[in-house]
Image (cartoon, rainbow, N blue to C red; front, side, top):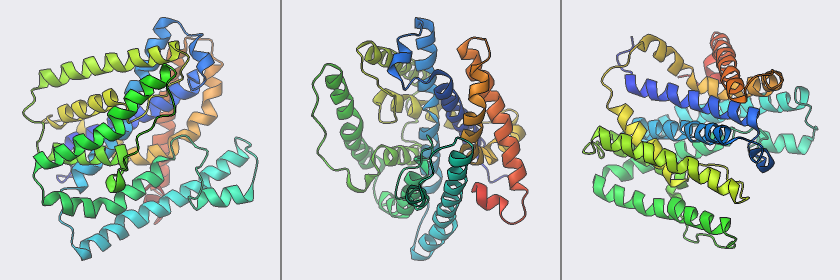
Length: 353
């Protein structure tokens, strides 16, 4: 066992990729982005779907908080920044471009998307969003990585209380106020938007990263486990009820990471996981964690190619989601392991360090 690894971080990383895959399987079975679909669902199905989205949206916050936990507590000078950019940012950028090419080929030759040379080149050069649901994460995390050494240097000169006050202010701007505006939109009051610029904060994604740093600094350790668990339960109930509420008012709200109660669930659960002393079956967890980002890159190909066959099975849709998830995970991990074995380039393609 690699003694430099943090067991609970590996466990959190595995949970993150499981929830991401679950969310995309849920998407492709229920097609919930179409508001007309929601009206056909029973109340139990609505609870499963919206509860599923609350669970499925935990993955990205976990990945971001892991990034903050591991990378923001380092000392960076000019030489170390150059090394960090070379090892991490350059590698990640090349990996992103490689997968842009792979996905372009997948979209054109497998999903039969119309070929447009200008559009393809623009997407590969990251000048236009790629038509793959999860790929927005890649240019976002590249931008985060470039600024991490500067954020780390700034944070080292501040006490945790000041950092928390800044995080609170930014949360009001990019989470609380948008939530209030969302409620107003549901009731027909639109045309309003927050005008304060968040500058170099990275928005809600940057906030998750900084919260990961605060967890590393034990900022939330004074909150006992029972309060954290109760907060998670209450926030989860509110999250599910609000999604049902919005669709019942003919407003198709697609749960996203700035939703304040989703943020509360993510942070409280991550804090709870950070308190785990040992992880059972760690050899298995370590393997699953090692290939978690590779599965993130690969899994959507299998989701898109297999989901229709699963949909055609005459069983309950919630069971279809779980079957699709298990098949996708199996094929994705198997593919990741095979690609990893390719001499010299396997690790590079999958961004495994």
